[in-house]
Image 1: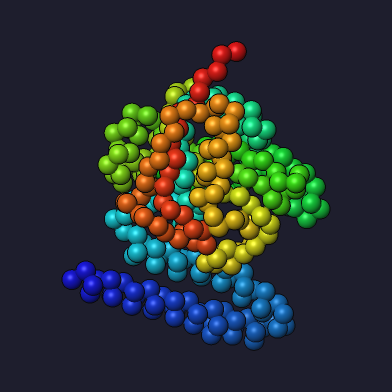
Image 2: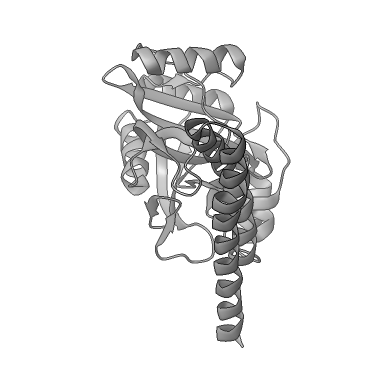
Length: 278
């Protein structure tokens, strides 16, 4: 029965893939090519395919593949797989900010028109923007609560960065060990002064690229998110900002998995932030 269900799922996904190609080539491009110059038709087709058709087709496929599964990765605004979850720290928001400030990392600006324009300008001119905004990824039904970054070679195109989502410790302790879906689907954000679990997704930007599934313009990232996770934890350990480091498995016992174009072992490193005396 399981083999039959898997076969049917793959058959449906293959059908969705064929449908997307047909829509892009024989509907969007054919229609645009009849009304616009060739170069504009290609540009319009790319825009519709990358930002409308492919995200929706992939969302439908993911719902089939990942139904009843606990996610071990964030999602984009289109519902596509984002960065893998790989770090969790226990502490207050003030302690989290202090720990990354001690590393020389900057807190990311909130995403808006001004900060987005500043990021585009810095990226094109390769001029420093240490507090550049992050695109919004989603976990627990909401965008990241806070994010930190450190530029590589003082360039906005290359940086270490991590997004965090807060989760009540009571809620986390109740569901973390069992891997219950409610752990990931809870949308409540605890107060900023509460000691909470900060669930993070850390990756390293390396330049400009297209997304693997929909070919949207984005930062290129190092596919080895395990290395970035270990780098962040080692940096925090070296300055004495964390203690009681443990490793847990995200999702439902995923020994190894590829998420989008990332390679991840599915593990989350958990540690407690150290409260330092003034």
